[in-house]
Image (cartoon, rainbow, N blue to C red; front, side):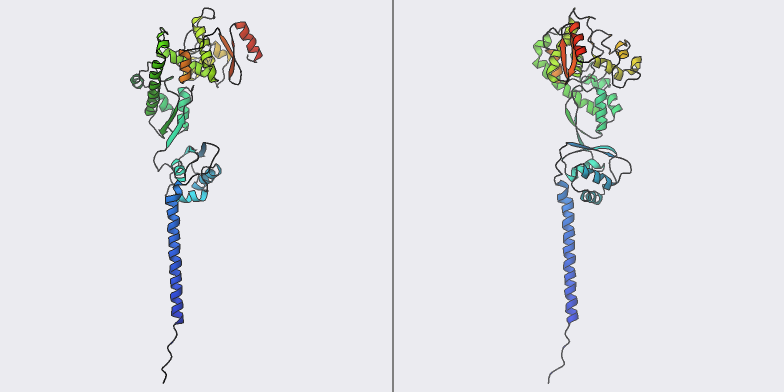
Amino acid sequence: MEGPEQPIEVESDLGSGIARALSLVTLLAVLGLLGAMGWLFVIYPDTDGPASEVEEVHIQVSQGMTLRQLATQLQSEGVIKDARVWSLYMRMRRLDRHLRQGKVRFRVPMTPEEAARHATTSLGRIQVRILIPEGFSRFEIAQRLDEYGVCDADDFLDATEDASLLASYGVEANDAEGYLFPDTYEFDDDTRPRRVVERMLANWTRKHEEFEEQYAERLSKLKGWTTHDIVTLASIVEKEAAVPSERPRIAGVFWNRLTSKRFLPRRRLQADPTVQYGCVAVPEAAPSCDDYDGRITRAMLDDAQNPYNTYRHSGLPPGPISNPGRAAIAAVIDPEQHDYYYFVARGGGQHHFSKTLRQHNIAVRRNGQN
């Protein structure tokens, strides 16, 4: 006799299958999520940024700008590839709460992690690579350092007038103008101004030692000329010579004006940049500098109260008017020998040189100079 039939547990098997499937899906989802998170935190930060035709991008981060707005702008400027992914990365690390304010510079190409470091204040300091061009004055250097976030402009200028600091590097002057050697430097953002000045002075000291060794014989013939005198004249040559090859010739013109009895008025350098520098360095000393906007006027050329006015004062100005590079200093130490006493701009940064005032006046008219 057959026994009762056993019930088929279809629903139980079906439920177990669904449960196993759900578990597998959950596992795969968890593994996928872990993989995505691993990629986001381990691989993504060091991926290459997009190629760019520019070396640096400036973004003005205003108060109230959101992370997404910043990310969108960074993508449009070619700093990051995907604004959404970078925004997620920043939020997951809670970096969106500490965005830098003001003008922020991004050197490109850079990785997402490097972009994050530049965009936020919570990842520590960032290294700033900054070029100080030949011929920049300390005032122009101060402005550039401030713009790049290295240090405050006014604090830097105060540091350049630190008597004890100048003395420690053998600078016998009231400020560091002329001795802040032009070069490419790397600083952390928010570097102490004194430290910045020390780096530049130390660089100048090394270069000066090289010059003394290289031009020892020539320097021995410059009787009565101090290092400060040479730097001062070189700073004027640096401002006048837009074309590097003309530095020795322009230096020769100034030497001729200083030493020849043929040039009148005697020992007047008659250099426009010295007048302009006076309006920047000591504007309170010269009434003609009241409305100075970067352009030189006849009143400024005639103003004897400007101590840097080499049209009205003989010899060298009170000190350097810029920070000259190696070539300008070398040009002063070893100038081109010639009989030129005048020069006037003729376009393209070049100058027309003349031996007599008559020739010079003709060149001035020909080149449309007033």
